Image (tube, rainbow, N blue to C red):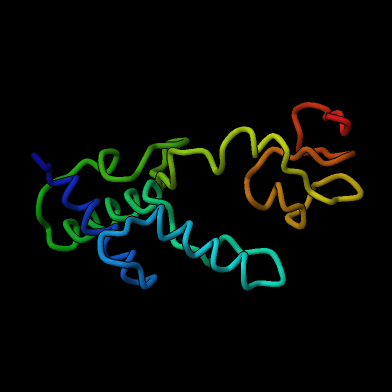
Length: 149
């Protein structure tokens, strides 16, 4: 039996999928992979991740927040934001963006930036994407990395 939350998440995924010209009921994860694969085959540069559809996990939280906002505008139901895509951090409500890792841990362990000096600016691709950096001479890393691994 579907709950109100399941209905909101399902409808949100279908809407977002249609915005990216996805096939009906294809699912965002399959659509994201299909769009990524198509761009890898046709692009001469790296694929810009922000141009791909969101994952199902990220879209579910977006849909929950949109539904909560709509209910608030209509003065309907007194819903708890922490049950609809928000969390409390440092006393403030902040959106839950995703509850999954950015990529499988094996892949995250081999990603490195190409910074020549310390990675203390947004030019570092690791820092820009919220990843722990494994570049040489990096200040955005909690451990030293042996480049021979």
